[in-house]
Length: 328
Image 1 (tube, rainbow, N blue to C red):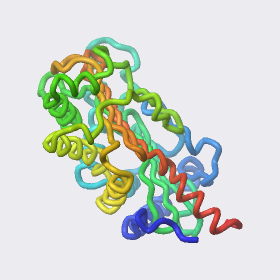
Image 2 (image 1 turned 60 degrees about the vertical axis):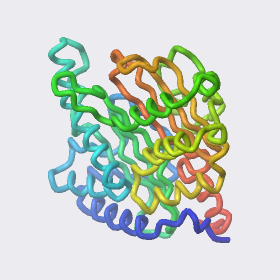
Image 3 (image 1 turned 180 degrees about the vertical axis):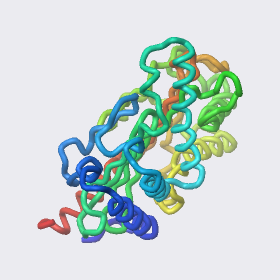
């Protein structure tokens, strides 16, 4: 039995192995106890996007050279835009620290661009499945590698503040703008289907569950009921999330969406259509779901997530691997 060729990303898998090996080789023994874990560690599927410590080795506890190697590993899983967005999210922690300190809020000292934790699960140099992750406030990357196959979800990107008050600089602006643009093209009949509530939920509905539940998402308006320009916008919106990852993996992810059929992909919105007011949207398909929420901190605090309903944590490719290699 072989793994699905449509999900093969051999160049990406090779780069990840090389980058992970180099990162691991740079670690001192005490750092390895934090950064390394077995692939089947009990907390493998535990994750969060909230502030606070994570399992793994933080950038704060690395040398400059080790940080460079950790970020090189991160870049093997992200495309150019995804890498820029991830770094922007990390830098926002310094901005948030200053804003909260100036406002006299407690907990400002939790904000630090180096409070991001890296962890390698399993042996990148071996033949068995392995994984790596980069986690911290508003950034959660989980990459699973099975031979030449790479699964890139769950993936979370967030931003607080989404728009910096003094400079107006925005982080993750296209995710908001494309969703709002698509909503603006809908006629009254389409809106009656797409808009599930005048009030947006306080966060993404799937939260940080290890297994995403698509039934939590309102049904929404189907691609099949959209005009051609609206369908183009919906495609751009989906690709905005999928194209965060390295191009080889993004291509396999998009192929999976196409193979499952675009007609059943749906868009739903909740909350205000007015800029600066709380809003939420989701895009769901047979194989994936995307969520966007901007309601917290006076609607200046974005949460976005991409879940693959078959490939989160590499679930189905792992199942095929273990069926083909029962003694691994």
